[in-house]
Amino acid sequence: MKIGIFTDTYNPTVSGVVTSINMLEKEMKKRGHEVYVFAPTKSIKPAENQELYMLKSMPLLVAKQYKNRIATFYSRDLAKKIKELNLDIVHTQTEFGLGLFGKIIARKFDIPFIHTYHTMWEDYMHYILFIRGKRNIYPKRFARSFSRKFVTKAECIITPSKKTEKYLKYKCKIKNKQIYVIPTGIDIEPFRKENFTEEDRVKLKESLGIKKDEKIVLFLGRMGEEKSIDIVMNNMPKVFENYPNSKFLLVGDGPSKEGLEKQAKELGISDKVIFTGKVPWADVPKYYNIGDVFVNASITETQGLTFIEAMAASTPIVAKYAPNLSEYIYNNKNGILVKRDEDFSKSIVNVLTNDNLSEKLKKNGFETAKSYSVEEFGDKLELLYTEVIKNYKFKKDLSMEEKKKANNSFYKRTIDKLLSLTRLKK
Image (tube, rainbow, N blue to C red; front, side, top):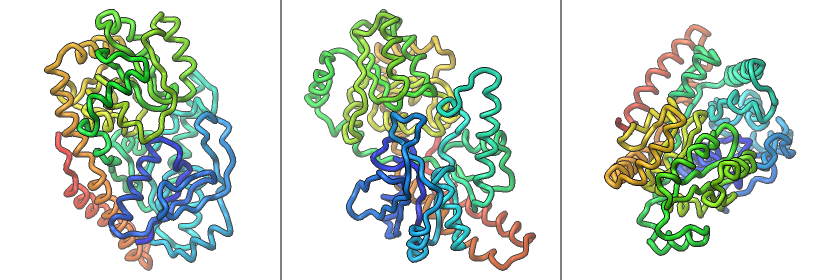
């Protein structure tokens, strides 16, 4: 197959979307398929043998600290090149510039297109429209309407979690459109504890000003309002009171960092809170491996790859309850889910002081991470591509009523095949 991936975010940006695309690209190429990535200018190839085409773009003014770019939605020269490539399928990963370009290309050259819905935009409207309170309902409605209209011509939609599937069905009111839940898989090998010696861990801790015997409460990820890191920060004074020999380590960068630094100062815990700023992706597994408990209070994740990465590193998790997390984190089995903000401190201290609980969470968490394999992710996408292309060709000359029946048959057949590939069990 010749697969065209259209995305507004690509390397060197570090995000769940980019991770998902990298995993998809890697797996499809490993299986002998040709993968072509279409991304904004300033993107980079992570490897020499990757096919990357860039659409002219400009810096995005909102959330500019991430150095995101917004692309124009069409390029005549690139369209000519794509025609020569003779793509079998278009897979859009964004609803904006490159996503619109992908839709145009699919229609222009009669190629089936599918879409992965990564981001519930109504949770991120504060970056674009600085509206709070009751008036916030209007940008939310716009985000839902925009999302619905984007996917009207897609052969099907992929979501990384059941939470996102329900959002599209019941909030965005997307009807008569096949939606498949396919979580992004990760390569767990780089995160394994066996990859790092005790000397490696001690050396990294010392470089951060953390003593060998001090325990680490770890947050790793983008520091944005939607991550609710302030909730964890408010709980840290009680953690330090009950477990003084600990530090709060925040790895990453974002618009909330300055506010969090101020919050730590106001709480009188600045000496026990460490901000690393952005770190190279290659070093990320090291940071997971010095954490004694991984914390996150976000309820806006569509999947939450950082939780699976923490599990792969055998780092116990304490997180705020959210529907998507409850799909794979089972309370007091492979992680701890708290329902009240004020319960974070108690749960964190419990993990730091209860060795039996900590070991159970580590062991079960690692087993869960293994279930989210990149191989299964690749199996499901390869199957879906094959079925979509086959169905698209089959229904070309059918009437509207016959097309509807063909789509229903395709949906049932594909759901059954995807379920047969699912290895994750509760």
